[in-house]
Image 1 (cartoon, rainbow, N blue to C red):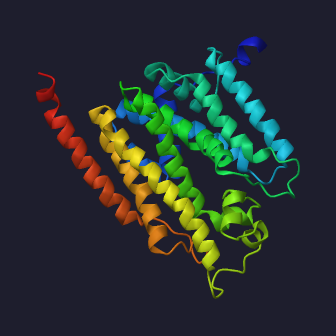
Image 2 (cartoon, one colour):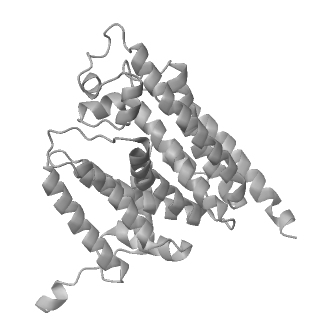
Image 3 (cartoon, rainbow, N blue to C red):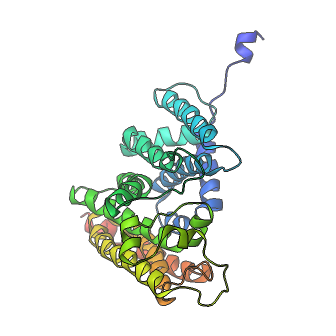
Length: 318
């Protein structure tokens, strides 16, 4: 065999590539995977591929064993490989193989995937690792949420299927609801990583300083949360609640066989926000989450909805 032949990189089989993406989603997706299960197989494969792509970008961005400059370089290199794969170049990356196929099947613009990666790089834009990552206003935070969450929503609705263009803005705002929920849940963990996602102007309105969030006393300290911090977090939760209304309006615009999956996802995330509210916004004493049995109950209802959709699909098509 010639040296040239030995250097040829084999492209992973499509079925194997999707299987790898499903494994990544099942292992890492937490809330998302429960919704994926409620999708028909072809759509489920595509969603898992997009998730695996997103997960890799996040992991490269968040790997604090490397400097910010090194992480930016790794992301740029990985993105260049993806751009080559987009054009049909041979790739050994099974995620690229699956995403390329999913993009073609569901008419997903590659520009949306580039925006998704751009969102992960925003955390690497601060000039030094000593300065905390902050956002001056809610508009600035909205832009971040758009890139890391709304873009995912815009990709997902192409896989879910829709015909009414109103679905696009509603999907964008649903992504904002999800990301604000994540930000509320992770205030303590983000501060430990020198990141404050709550807008600086909102902190000022509630008389909470960046230093206060960065250097809070350890969990278990009394009081676990101040009145000012509670007011701050409540203001963000109220914004999130408003965006969850967009999620409810989005549901009927999605193809019927995909609605149960979106219903599962919206309900799991909204339950997380409600648990934060029920804890009176104390996200410092412990990490708030939706218990697995509760997620499974939501999934069970979603699967029931999917069964009903499939049962009556032949009748509706007559």
